[in-house]
Length: 234
Image (tube, rainbow, N blue to C red):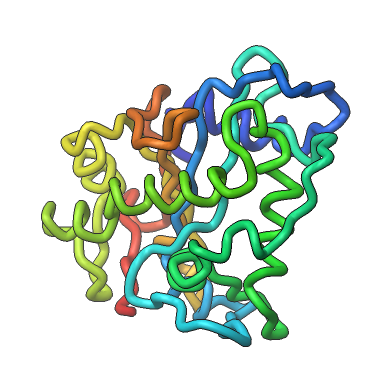
């Protein structure tokens, strides 16, 4: 594994499951992690993917996987915080069409994406109510997705989903040049278990829900091809 592992990624790996700490309405996250997933990689993995029962997700662009509040002093990335706000689809009805496209459920068996959104609100959104209510939590994730426009950002740097292998450092340089700080790149093994396939890219957002330069140091998954990752065709 690449030895340059950022502080923020270590916290994701080590503290993401912490839920025993007390987070009140006054507890304010320092910033958010937004995790983008390349759908084709998931769909070609052993677990596969299933289209949701409703909506038409974008499968030729990065989709949102998670939107996680980060607390530097209070335990990293909390989950399942105490909240009196129940997930109600009616409160995000104006966002539904965009969420169906850019934050869809691809899990199997096929289900309505509303079930995924409920899970994400309970797991992470509930820990960010000091800055974002139910509607604003999902609106912020969509806003950051539009601001970053990750596929265009990479394509403009010559990194395109065409089945080619790209150096992980090139991905990070493209992110840095866009003013987004350091990237964390995660991968899956290809069918033969010999090479790494681009799966997710983690970037950052402010607690107001705008793109934000990630601190830390560049990190890439354990690559088996000189730190190169394959960017699958959609």
